[in-house]
Image (tube, rainbow, N blue to C red; front, side, top):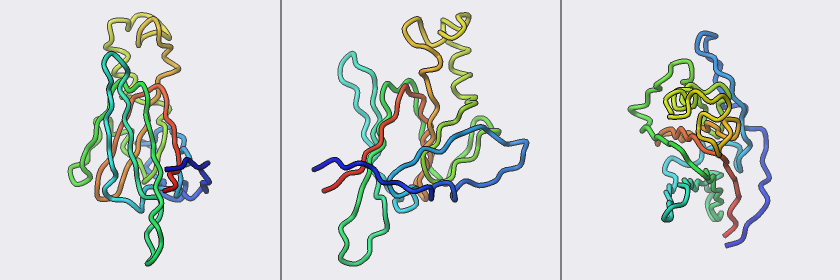
Length: 169
């Protein structure tokens, strides 16, 4: 299996729905191979957590619809140093914070995350500005990512970093 540099378009932007202002959230779209997750409704999900190491969540998905005779193309989104994640099946999808209910089908970072704020405000270090996730972890290094798939569901991931790679088989 070879790694290849991702060649991604801005097609993911077309999948962002306009929501009423009362439900607006600040987010940025992150380019992913294929431009969105619309071509896969059953991604391969792996959770890895070696002894005394941070948890890693890896999601492999098909980047394009398969045309007869064509080889499938895949990409992988890997979240590292995961502090929390949740997945909700699309049929039962709900959002804990209504103002952050939008997703489209792709990868985004929610910039004004109520999930992240809720988590930080309940930690034992909640009274330490900028260090509410602990003395060794700057609050600005913690991010809320969302990755959604049609007919599958939505992942909300609180993690330190995300990496994306296209897979050439």
